[in-house]
Amino acid sequence: MMTREIVAGFVPLLDCAILVAASERGFARAEGLELILVRETSWANIRDRVIVGHFDVAHMLGPMALASSLGLGHLQVPMIAPIALGLGGNAITVSTDLWRQMVFHGASAGGATAPQGKALAAVIRERARSGASPLAFAMVYPFSCHNYELRYWLAASGIDPDRDLNLIVLPPPLLVSAMRENQIDGFCVGEPWNSLAVDSGVGCIVTATSDVWRRSPEKVLGMRTDWAQLHPEETAALIRACYRAAEWCASPANRIELAALLAQSKYINAPQEVLQRGLTGNLRVTDSDSTVHRPEFLLFAPHLATRPSKSHAIWFYAQMLRWAQAAPTPWAARAAQDIYRPDLYRLALANFRTAPPTEEMSIIPGDDFFDEQEFDPREFLGSRQD
Image (cartoon, rainbow, N blue to C red; front, side, top):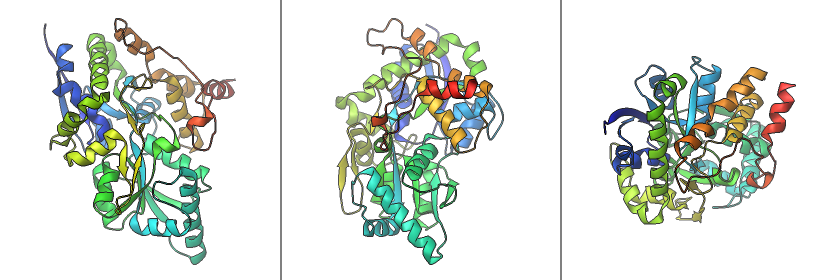
C-alpha cells in the first residue's frame, strides 16, 4: 500500500492527544498515511498555515473553521470539520491575588460554578466603586470555544464581558508568564496551562468549563474545503485513524503511556504528572493542594466525542451573533451548519462495528449548561431564515 504524507499543525494542548496517538501508535500508518505533526504556538499561525497550504490539516478550534468559512476577522477561506477531537478540556483560572478577593466574597476551592461567578461579579463591582482599572482576562483566539465559554459564564454571572472587563488574546503558551508578570488577572485555556499556573503559584482554577457546559465541544480536525475535495480518500483515512486513536486515548489503561507521549518536548513539553491530571479529571485547583474530580473533564471517545455535531456548529454561530462578531444572514446560517460534516464522518466509518449513531441537528438540553438554558438550533436557524 502506498503511503501518503499528511502534514498536520497542532498547538501544545492536552487535546492534541488524538493526533499524537494517531501518529505515534501507528493508527495513521495503518490507514496508509504518514502523519507529520508540526507544533505551532498560536491559533493565528495554525489558521494562516492551513490557508496558505503549509499544513494539509490541523488541530483546530471549532469556531475557527466557521470564522474562516464566513470570512470573519481574516480572509474568507471555506473549511470543513469532518471529525471532532474530543469534548471539554478547558478551565478558567484567575491570579492568586484575584482569587483571594473572590474568596472574601464567597468563592471556594472546587466550588460550584454559579457562586464562583457571583464572587467575581462582587469583586468587579467593588473595584468599580473604588475607581480601580478593569480586570484583564485573556482567551486564546476571538473565534474560540474558550472565548464563548468564558463570555457565557461571565454574562450568566451578571458580568458584561465587553464593559466590565478587558478581554485580550494571548497564545496558550504565554498565559502563565503573562499572569506571573501581572499583565492579566485571569484566562480561559485548555490544559495543561491551567494546572501549570497553579503549580507555578501564580493562579487558581475557578471552574472547569465542563461545569459551565457539560460535554462542551472543543477542537476539530480542520482542513480547507478544496483540500478535502481533492483528497477524499485521505480525508476518510484521517477520520478512521483519528477515530481509532480516540478510542485508544480514552482507555484508562493507556493514560500513563499517553501522558508520557504528550510530555515530550516535540509535543506539549510539560511534566507527565501534570498531564495525567487533565487526562484523569483530577485537577489541583489551588496551591494549597485542593483538588476536584471531574470525570468528564476531557472526553476523547465517550458520549460521541468525535462526532462533528451540527448543533455545536450552530451554537458557535449563535455566539458570533450574540457578541457582534457576525451579522445574521440566511447565507451565513446555512454556511455555518455545512462546515461540520457528519456525512463524511458517517461514510468513513460505515464499516466500523463501534461507529457512533448519526445526528444532523438536536436540542442541547438545559441541564447541560450551568444556568439551565436550553439551546435549540432548529428554532434558532428558523428564526433567522424566515
